[in-house]
Length: 78
Image (cartoon, rainbow, N blue to C red):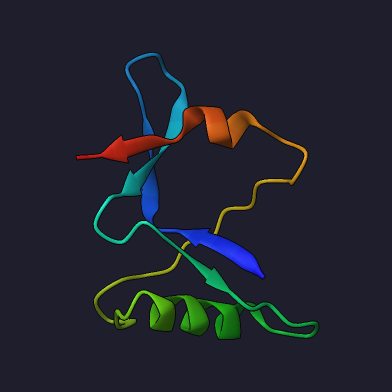
């Protein structure tokens, strides 16, 4: 399983990048299988959030499990 968060990266006034979570969509868990292509993962993510590829694009970022940097930088978009 993989946690997928809906939102975007923004550069704050302190010149640091922060991930801003979309409070309407938040996050979902998706099943990732061995041999799955990136395109398949993107379609799965779009399906979980119930949005179409023409409406939204998928841009995937990865946070290593031993890194807390992203967790510290997450902001909620009001």
